[in-house]
Image (cartoon, rainbow over all chains, first blue to last red; front, side, top):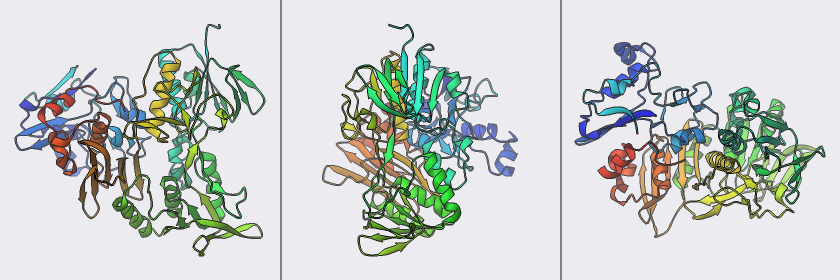
Length: 143
Length: 425
């Protein structure tokens, strides 16, 4: 299935992917409101790693046999119909078993003390991080 | 031979459920009968501390939906205990004297609490591993206000935390010289000790309960081995669990502390599999079979057993000791040999006031790690342990705040970031 992969040779570390991700996962989906007026503030689900001249964006790989689903003790972490690994917010209790076993380190703790991760933007054809990267440093493809 | 084989599963927690799902992924027809001594629908045992203090109700603890058994065509015999196994005739006897034939059997009976000998112990002692235990304790807490908990491991401290959140008096008694000895090192256990004391929980180290004191049958306190007496009106034993292997005793199935399985999760008796807290399976750090009663391990073992029972060959890759735990507002994730000491180990540490990280290395490989408070991205360490990766080149960066793929050599990093999946669990 298609997921998001980084191409670090094209990444300039601008973090637009993080900004667009946060806005897409906010209530208003409006950049000013999302950053200035929504509390708790939405979180970006992806992570830009940067040291000196090297940077790239990491996000969930939606592993075919996802360790986070295997480890989830509430049934919150599951695969949706599109094949994306997503969190059921009503079931998650914030035990962080998923964080313990995610080898990509891409599950975060959000303000409500539940797991927060990439959902591949269910309302969009292409995830917003990929769509809005000015350099095509993120690709959405099947490997 | 009958066309549709009969699979019987003893147990109803995560190993059993993962097995059902794996079997059904491969085979829609095989008959599955599941036997559980507990009457409840699938529920998450790690959630019973939250149930105790009222954070979760029973419904919330169901980690699979109401239709789970129906959808997976499982005949669930709940509240029925499997009491005897005849592996030659391939029969299981239940406590209502019914018997079940199986072609393949999965033993996923979990663990049972360990209760040390104590003078004055009667059958009113409370333990804390099942929903039923939690209900009894919840009832008890309606009228009792002063609790002694024995055991300052995971279970004991979870009970203590819940009782403290219910504004009960809690005194913990622990034999070791610190709390959480199995999963925390000295520094991290001190951080949690502080957290418990801050929340009014009294923790008594280096002592044990010799006698339970009673007046007119009612518990009034405990006498410790150091001569002190602690007053209480209720008492919980939460020292730990041991594998529940009653059903295999007297059969040809081999066991040590737990049931011995091979990498397909099969016991020494053909067609009998075992998974979860009742087994000893491959520990990739100790490099031997060990009992590692942890949810993720049970889940993967159940799945591997399920696939093999459905005749899709699958191999359990092994696992190791790991825990993710939060007490009050302080989270910790720990991996492997957290208390390793000696010349063969290299230890990297970063200590801040509320934040602690430690990485333990042997021969260029990570064999243990602790993340307290800031646990973000900890799983990268799990991946490196499971891959048995040589981290010599970038080891010092593993305690940096920006731990990530950025600290790895470009080749390693690119390989990982272009793969679909790097480790199985």
